[in-house]
Image (cartoon, one colour):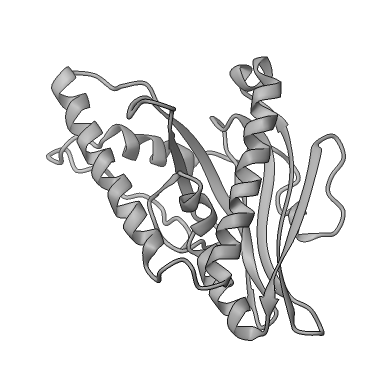
Length: 231
């Protein structure tokens, strides 16, 4: 559900974790780009790099429903190695932190704030888009949509417009572009598997529960060290 206004802090309550503090800051922030919701249309805004990739999933409403549930449950992101905090099916207006462990490490992690800017759940079209918030290495929007055409064929499409924002992303532009390409390929592969019934029901929440356990361990390590770890 969309983010709800926060309540006044309880002076006697425990200090919120670093992850919670980042989430609260992200909820208070505005998107880092102007063209919010532009992935709904066929034409993406100028001034950004554009991406569209589409893959065939199968035929019929059962395939649409299965793939749609997977996409709305952040299956693309979870299947690519991200943790989604807080975990809940995508809803317009909700803010999440996508977290990715750096290779060979548990901490620090890359923490990517974003907001769901629209969601669609119709008989022939299911999906959502999220936009970037301050702190995201890019500026722009990405949409994930499963659709069924008039002949009953089911497709999954990823569309995006973005430009690099963080200095480290601009400095390592070739690597950043390659990482985005690899992520899109994994998104497509994950949805193909889900549409074919190869991803067991409930796998995404199980992955997320494991990520939350690692987060809690990280918060304990932070408290023991007396300060926040990077990421």
